[in-house]
Image (cartoon, rainbow, N blue to C red; front, side, top):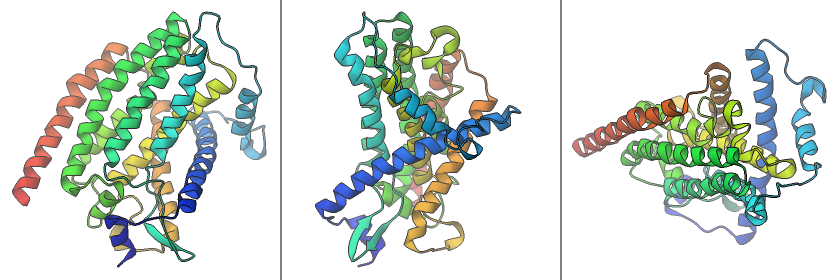
Length: 343
């Protein structure tokens, strides 16, 4: 049985392999977030005609480490009007759900490593997108509880904005994936990658790609949809009262969610670890290909932040319900009709 076929029909990994993969996922996530942080600050500097970080370490490369160390060594405090347990629990929910979602990103096919079959992903569930949206729904509580438990009206207003924003754009995001699922005939993310062997789904599902990407900006609270933490009117939104390690947790979760969206876009629209023109490199190249594609999507996130101004809240809600949702619905219906007719 070929390795590729084994990844589709399932196989059993030893327990020690699963534990090792869990540790690797945390390690990779902890390493990628500082890289994205320094990349964003450097790129924003270039976009805005300035240098960006260039003092801490060679070319400012250690600036993220300095920022994280500064936050982790600060005193933990909370307002007297806050709810202590929920105030401490909220950032934990955000970071755990982000890591759990990151675990589903496939960085490669099943490979033979020292005689053991190992899938280059955390978990390959048969309900991949549903798993993703389930943890996305739980992540909503990290924002909601953080804002409500702070005892601040600014924080609570930011949390309520976040709740409405996540619900509004998650519907369009889910509908955008339906076209891919109809075409691939599977909910497994590795199965979706294998189904793109002939053509990446960004070609037949270009409208779904754009809808999912725009909704991803809103889901991760990134500009121009960063209304939940709008400093102009809400000071800092749901995380206004958070500092030290708790603020660092929210910060880490936000950037890890950007990587999750980039990873999902890479998997379902850009062919995952597959290369164009039928190029079939060795298995160890697969993670490099995925990371390169993820870096392009992450660069787009940064580019948009440096380019577009923040929307008004009424514009954000109108765009989600009156533009993205109808387009996503039409795209799903058109794909369903084409699949039925062509099969």
